[in-house]
Length: 270
Image 1 (tube, rainbow, N blue to C red):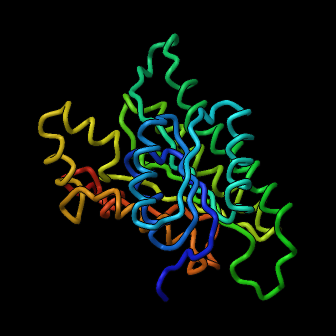
Image 2 (tube, rainbow, N blue to C red):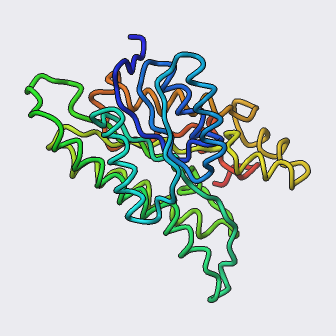
């Protein structure tokens, strides 16, 4: 069945660049009314203007969703613009290295405040609004009343010492996804996530510029032998948000070219 988001009202965070922007563009092109949220107001305005010129229904909200007031304002602005919220895609995230032996390293605190708490708080606020604005779905209404998709990382399962803080917070988002899926299921709200690996996100673009040989290293450990495009991650997120995934909840879909299946050892251990 072709994917359609016709008439759906969607919030996409982290929508000014990278995977978040790719998701926002794809949602709009599939007929959704999209609220693009982020902190880079000039970039959001520019991207919105480009999409509007193509006849797509988009608007934006610039604010720091680490602040509770910004979450309240984002939800209110979306309802004011589109009357309802059908889909939330939490694509805002940050990747930072940390020193696992430094007790004064604040990276864990920063990443927990950036990647985990806003995902929880915005999901709670949106879920409450979905429930308030919807009528009770019929027992055979497969689409439910809404869907939430989180963007996380395969670092939750495969890590490096300098990525300890990021890996732990990614694992927290994974478990948050499962826990919310169970908690929200009774209301007809599905919650899933995509876990990125070897995908050309904003953070990976930056890393490729800073580390010579990283691209060849990544392709070597990715069975499909290449780096994925942000648009490919967007396709996975949009599928999970759509009614085509109406019986899928609590799942973490790896978008990694098979990387998490590959044993990093080059010889078998018996």
